[in-house]
Length: 256
Image 1 (cartoon, rainbow, N blue to C red):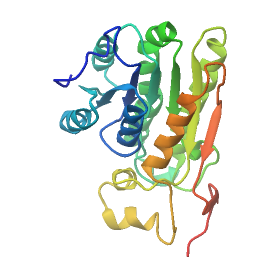
Image 2: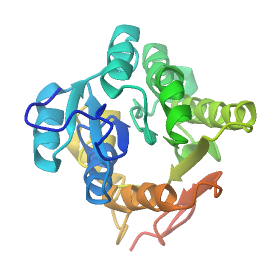
Image 3: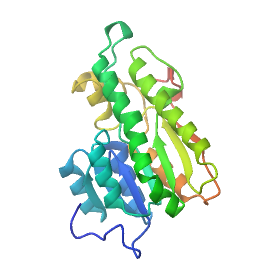
Image 4: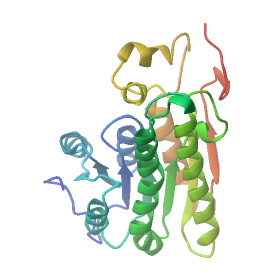
C-alpha cells in the first residue's frame, strides 16, 4: 500500500472504491474522478510504480494486484477491509486481431483470464465487503460484446463472457443491497489499449482512430462510472452503452 494516506479500513475514512487496472487509461481516469467525488480509492494494478504515483497524486492507496493471481486478489480483499462502497472491474484488454484461422489461442486464454475470470475472482473476494456497505460493482465491458467483427473473435468472446457474468450475478444477488452495473464503451482512444492489442505497433494502433474526429476519452468513461455511483441506492443502471457520436454502431464509424 502507499504511505502517508488514510487507511481505507478506518471507520472514519471516506467510502472506499476499488479500481482494478488503475495504472493507465480508463482505470487511472476513473480513480482520479472517484477521488474527486469523495471516495478513498484503492488503485490496483500489476504495475506497482504507476499505481503508487497515481495513489500519491489523488490521496489514495496503491496495491500491486494481478487479477489472475489468487494470492494477489486475497491480498487486495485484506487491504480493502470489511466495507467497500464501489468496485470497478476494469482490468482486462484486447490482444491481437488475427482471424480465427490464424488465432493465437494463448492470447485468447490471457484475455479470458483477465476480462472474465479475473473480474469474477475480484468480485467474489470483495462481495462480503460490498454487501456490508450496501455497495455497487461496475464492470467495464465493451461494445465488442454486442456484435462480432473480423479479427475480434477472441476479444468478442471474452467481453461477451464477462457480460454473461454481470447478468448472472445480478440475478443471483437481487435480494441483497448490492447494485450490479455494466458500462460498455465503444471506441475509446487511450494511450495503451490499441498499442497493447497490436503488440506495440504504434503505426497500426494509430490507424484505429484515423479520421475519427472525437473518439471517446478515458475521462468520458470515468464520468459514466461517477454518474452511476452517484445515483440513489435503489436505482440500478443495468447496462450503459457509451460511444462517440461518430460511431453509430460497432461496424459503423464516420471517418473524415
